[in-house]
Length: 124
Image (cartoon, rainbow, N blue to C red; front, side, top):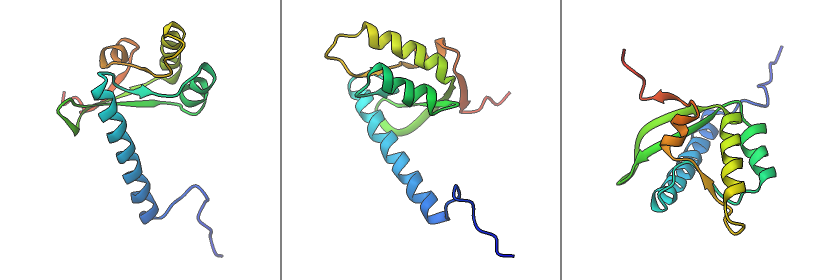
């Protein structure tokens, strides 16, 4: 019997191409965030697309913190509950000026909402 690969699987080449695109996106987004002194930035948002992008599409969100002077040097990665992140981002969005369509969280805010540090792993 000939078994078909499930449609959700990808071959090795596709995997690495996708991974490179993700790394490129994260690096560019983090570089922009560093320039304006914000980490984990969401741009071109309104309340509805925040709900879709943060709350409905994710079971977990991963926030990365890069070295300020070297945007390729990953320092920490946090795992965040999408509902907690959504709640704080909506508050920030509602409190922002009508011309601002960017919201973000600093590392301190990420920690404050109960994010779990997943990288580097604690060696205890």
